[in-house]
Image (cartoon, rainbow, N blue to C red):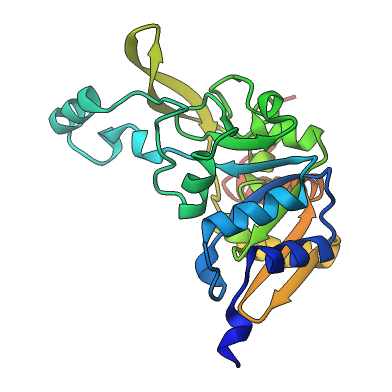
Length: 270
């Protein structure tokens, strides 16, 4: 393969994205891994430039998780964990980096005219005409559920764009996992309440309990329309967020039901 074919400019990315059905007024949930492609001069800057041109009258949303603020008690003995918690900075939508996420997520989060929601561990960053609505403060409980950012993207009939990534990293699937009545688990993180730092607790659910997102994605590709751009180095997938949520909800409800029955669950008490 000619090395020149592996070079993608912002204009090349713009053309590829428009050719697979993204419209200027679309709201898109983007997850990107630029390492999966060839040479992108400007890297994250070129990708964001292309995306903003494609959906100039719409919205771009990206995960901006700050998992570095998770409770250290799960990884350290009590005495050391308490010391770490005491020194841990509180979540700040403007200052807290998207730690543990891709370089793209952190670059996008830090851009001018980008908003970020209030969740201390599982926030999203948004750019576009509805960014304030998308990132309006919401309950800390079930951060991927109906009242959170994914719920707002669902209402906007958004599209999911996997740019060099696969279903294994598709956060839209967490929406379905949050809405099927799974047992709650408790997490905690530091926030500011006035001038005081506090560790708050919130409810969530267990995610990816079957380690099967890729298998789910393979079946989803056979059941729903997915636009695919196969580039010389890398692949772009575009599909409707409501479609993946509907499919994943049915998928996990069946698996959870089978798991419960195999564990001796006889169904709800009459």
